[in-house]
Length: 131
Image (cartoon, rainbow, N blue to C red; front, side, top):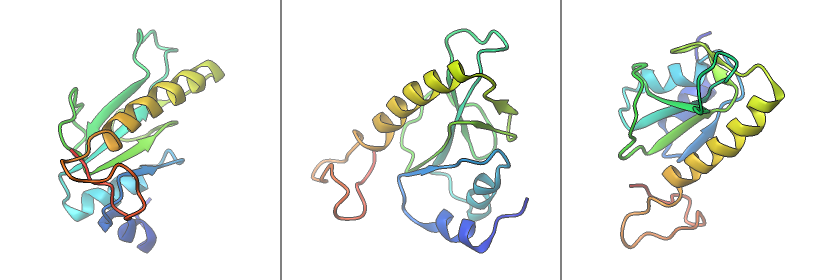
């Protein structure tokens, strides 16, 4: 599905976190169209395939799996998974419990606690800053 004007507009904003509730990859495509390199996508991953203790995977916009995220300005969080880039989908209620718990812990670490010196940690100024 092609991004709409709303997706395209959101992709240009300095938003620290966007939660994507759809599997279709439209918001990811909107970010890719902008050419931004400061966006990562974190997806929920099922354990039904015997994936060990991995509940989320993080990708750059080219679809490359990234282990360590150094300085994203925006995290696109897809707790249900997505068709792109690796067809990650949650399939059970226990997946949801762990993915939401672990994923939200990781997102808050990336987007909230990584404040540059002198920036406020609250979002009242509309732009909390990033690592």
